[in-house]
Image 1 (cartoon, rainbow, N blue to C red):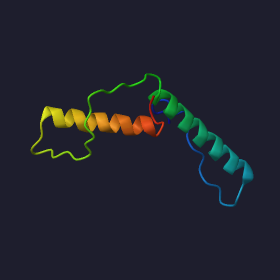
Image 2 (cartoon, rainbow, N blue to C red; image 1 turned 90 degrees about the vertical axis):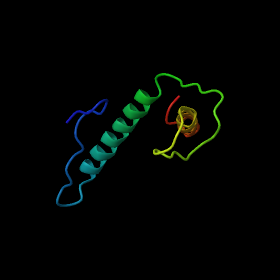
Image 3 (tube, rainbow, N blue to C red; image 1 turned 60 degrees about the vertical axis):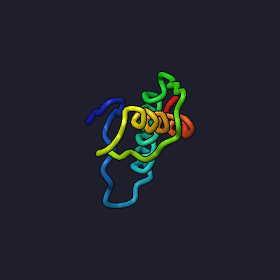
Amino acid sequence: MTTGNRRGRLPSAPADYNARWANTLINQLELNLSNTNLAASIQNYTVANVTEDRALDADATTLAEIADVLGTLITDLKNRGVIG
């Protein structure tokens, strides 16, 4: 199965412990994670004039509040190294 930047399927678990299976699983997980992080970090995001806001009332909101929540989310993701 190939989804986005992911390559290959994770191997099925063997009936008994198998070091080769475990190494294959770890390698595939690391590859998937590195591809996911690369895809998310290709372009850098810049936000300005954002008031930190992590509460969004979907029934009563303004465009400015949505922009602040989105800007806060982008800033949080940048601070955690998920995006550039």
